[in-house]
Length: 234
Image 1 (tube, rainbow, N blue to C red):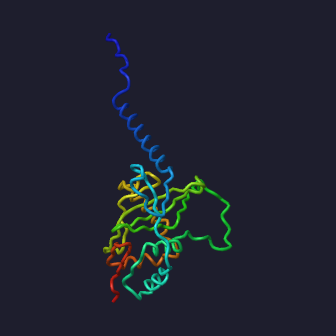
Image 2 (image 1 turned 180 degrees about the horizontal axis):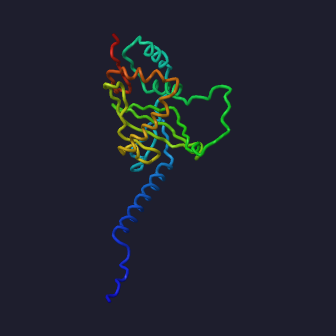
C-alpha cells in the first residue's frame, strides 16, 4: 500500500484567513488608538509649520460679539424676511443656547431600573461652527458616560452647504473622530454625520427648523458669512 502523505502544513486558505483576521484586528486596534488620542484645542489657527505631519487639531469657532442672532432668528421664524446673513460668531452663540440637551421634566424621578444598554448612551456638546472660505466645519464633543465617564472625543467634519429640492442640506466631505480620519471614509463619514444629526434633530428648541430649512432656495458661504435665501411665499 502507498504510504500516507505526511502533513504539508497549513493550507493556503488558512494562511489567507489568518492574515485577513490579523489585518482587520490590527486596523480596528489602530483606529481605536487614534480615536482615543487627545486632540489639542486652539482658539486660533496655529502655524502649519509648527505642526507635525498628519497632526489633527481642533480650532474653535468664534463666539464673540453681540447677540444679534436672537433678532435674526425671530424675524426668520415669523416670515418677516426671506434673506438672512449669519456670521460664525452668531451661529455659535445660537448653538450654545439652542443645541443643548433637553432636561428631564421638573419633578420627574429617574427610573431606578437600569439596562446594559445604558452603558452605550451618548452625550454631545453644542455644535461648534467654523466658516472656512466656501466650506463649513461642524464639531462636537462626544461622550459615553456609562463607559468612559471622564473621557470625551472630538468629532469634526468639513463639508459644504447646498440648497436643492429638499432645501438646505450639509454634505460632509472629510473629518475626524479624535485623530482617526473616519470622517473622510465614505461609509463611516455618512454614519458619523447621521449620528451627529440624530443627536439634535429632536430638540424642542429647533423643531421649527426642519420646515424652515426645507424652504431655503439658495445658500452662499463666503467672507466668513453664511447667507441663506428662501423661496418667496405666495
